[in-house]
Length: 460
Image 1 (tube, rainbow, N blue to C red):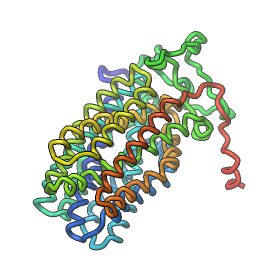
Image 2 (image 1 turned 45 degrees about the horizontal axis):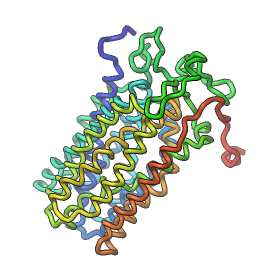
Image 3 (image 1 turned 30 degrees about the horizontal axis):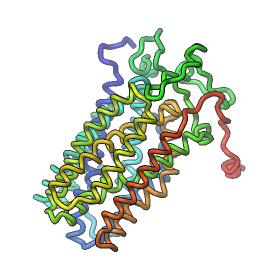
Image 4 (image 1 turned 120 degrees about the vertical axis):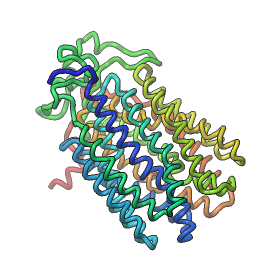
């Protein structure tokens, strides 16, 4: 296929940007838009509603490894279509719920399952396969779409406020089914399938390609080592300066190889400790603003939209910066900055304070979100991106599941429960920063590609 003036990877990134905006507005941030109306209609507690989000994360973690394998085998586009169908059906079913049990069933079996199959992981895998050298800016560009979706949640809230949450759920399902398919159609799995190379590199210039790009469609004979076959000995001897981007090519590692590296566990623990921050944004920020600052529903959701708007600059700006600086140090600094922002949020007592403190948390949050896929690609390459991401969800699972519940429980139990939860999360973010900072990029010779001994027992 002849190269066009616009590298097709940017069309893939643009489509993924739109898909991210849909999921973020209607599913991720949208949960907060439904949270307060559900409490007012049914009288459910914060912890019970937080449990919905927690169990959704449990389901995502359980099926995450399977989803990752399916994405790597069949490509993200098929998974996106399947996820879109389930999510749209889930919103239509959501409009008919009349009990907490029905909410749990619909949310887990349809909405959460659809998001796990066709949302964040599929988008990240698609972009990671099309970009290596410019992965940071590409990921940032795509996740700007997530921020835009978060900004649009105020429109969903206004719709719900005017027509009711049941009509809002139907509206969300129709949007998923009408806007999603044209975007997904543009997505392709790997550039090699179209006769292209990552980043739009010309065929004779493999600069920026992952170390295994020369064997992108072949498996290693014994799975124990992947050679860096596109670099010279001089390139392999290069060592980056502390703040500069590592110039050495990526090594494509299988899931079993990644599991045997300290980098995998340090990154997984870091993003596990970061997980409660996501729970605050997706579930508890809106009720915190409404109840602690005594504001109405629309103003509280407006604070969430403002948070998403500010995060846009972090998603795009830090994504672009990641192509030039040490990704580990950058992510560690972003975690520390979020820790400061979370401490300040715990001290908010007036709307004017919230307007000042929320950006301090939102800006680095957007950066840490967009750089997760960049950091994973830096450590483990692109060929098995979905598989490695799926395995990492297993480690993230315990805290991602429990965070929405224990934050809600603290808010239900103690007068300043939300503020106490924010201080705990600030301490966890310091631990995240330390884990990322001490992690080191795996280098050859790689570990065995065979499953660890405990997994072999299930094959006998």
